Image 1 (cartoon, rainbow, N blue to C red):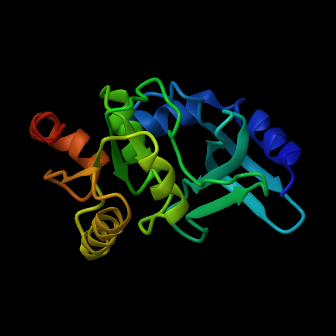
Image 2 (spheres, rainbow, N blue to C red; image 1 turned 60 degrees about the vertical axis):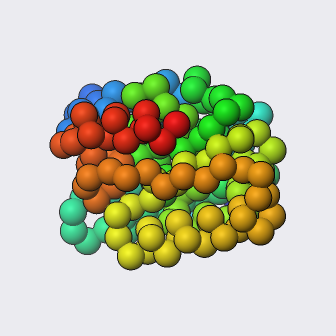
Length: 207
């Protein structure tokens, strides 16, 4: 997909701040300090359509927009996620570069909202945009971090993917310290909403 169209969609999405802020406040979040989320009522592309969706900018390593994750706000009759990536996007990720970037650790999560939850708490959260993180992201993280903390969803897929990531680092980068975050709730964002004290305690212990 052409970068120019992604940028055009993102620019259009910034006209609806109230809808974005209402949605995020329902998840105990503010808009992103990395790059603000937007909202699209309707957009028709050549082979895709965006309807009533939160628009989350996915940035390349140079901090330019190279992708969009469009999250439907309708509960029925719509595709939940519409991920649009430019060919130039080499490492699919969210918050790889952020105000909390550190060479000491990062906390790997599945989704953007989980990464944002950690970022807004002052922790270095990074999402691979899916449960099964691409190996290219895992290799890239090994260049920067001495410790990687896994905070995948508390379900079977999350457990299985945590085991895969641990095996990957044990094989390729045994010097990297690994930790699995123990927290309450389905995912990190739910933990932030409902169990923030125990989440903060778990994070401090893990780091």
